[in-house]
Length: 346
Image (cartoon, rainbow, N blue to C red):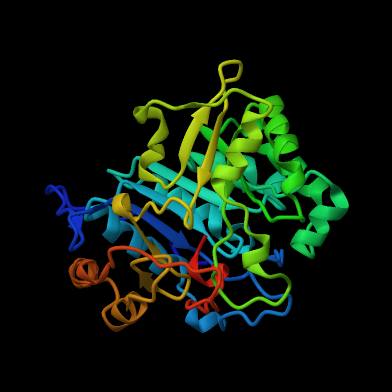
């Protein structure tokens, strides 16, 4: 296992990352693996080919990239995958990143299947918050949607995360028509009982799938909110609460509950004008936009000049003008982005 002793960041004020449209980039989504122990129907094909090990960044390279981004003004890092908890050595990476001066939030998105084992070690290593995927509360349906997952494992993981005392835990649900849209209210009630925020996500057309027709399965955020309002009062959150550190979620609260209900609407309510994030794939490809292929190979930079922080920073800064103004998702046409979400980093 590589030595993950923390490096010392420069003390001079960091340069700020800004794209060609004046948007400041302060949020990095760092994928630690393209592998996953689930095969969710909206995320990937049932039979997948994953990256050869040699093409995946080492933990040391991931830490170096994160340190470079923080030195350039990034204040939030979310670890993603694939499923990040299948990556060996993840806790040691979290421990290193959590010590980076200037990093305000270190978060992780997980399917929850291994949280019962890892929740407490991750909290002790310095992880601040968790997003946990939960698309159904019905065991057979959950297994059908994930192809390999078991609801009991995820529920045990949620309980372990709550017991560990994370700063914030949010559940994420992708809603598909005639698959789990009849569970919207059940998921809200579950979140209210558990005291956890909940975000409903419109399905994103990344990668070619044959399991279902995305246009037919699409459920808009407005429809989700309308159904919830049939049972509960929803009020927009004040701006200070709704911003979620610059994320794409629009939040609402209920007068009789402490939780927030959020919607992420890449189709029906494009959030590109306020986008403050970039993604680094497990193979070291810096993606400037979820719905476009504009990218820069940072793995080549790090392996050509290992340890050269200045060269890595220069490459990151030089990539910012490539960030496009917006993505263009069209459910009626074949997906223009053929990489699956596990390759993109959630």
